[in-house]
Length: 236
Image 1 (cartoon, rainbow, N blue to C red):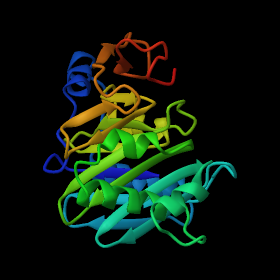
Image 2 (image 1 turned 180 degrees about the vertical axis):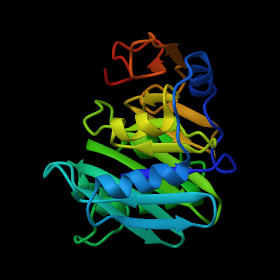
Image 3 (image 1 turned 90 degrees about the vertical axis):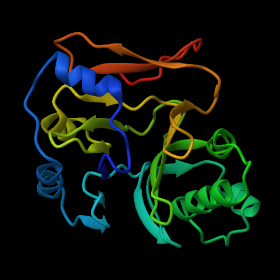
Image 4 (image 1 turned 45 degrees about the vertical axis):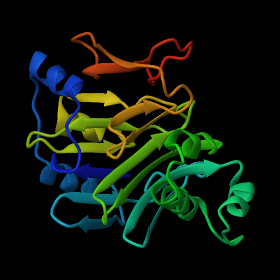
């Protein structure tokens, strides 16, 4: 799956900007990244949301345990990869039909977070049990909300393209070609929300997240870690 957002939606992370400046490497534009995604995957579903957001996914090389899905409801767009172990109980909690799948559940969870404040975002994501990564974009408020499960079972990466777009994908090699060293593994057990001011750990929301510059020979420009946690918040 792929989500590409202009700087008017997401501010490029300072740590990834610095990594790209520290170790310059070839980059491409967001348009070229989108074309490469389509070339690498068959039967791509691609959606443009205004002029600043591009979402895409494909079932190409999909894991049977981590299927990809996409849905739109009430101007809320969601890409979901993985599976929730507690989907049944969450359906009851959010008043959904038994036929509702994970991507619809995440949309409803986001709507509850948005419309029934002060429902903390760390509680919303913390109630999800299983293997997952998702990207939610709310067109009505221009809000981005995404997260990765606490063990990083579904890969998720983020980087900055040559023209300053922030891209999220489950394919590290795809982003490497577009983002160069302005690339990192998205920290597991964390969520990113433009509504609450950026990156947070949903298990320990008060813990600070720091970015450690990577060695020059590594693919990553930085590794994000949750301070005080025994678990390194990145996939090596």
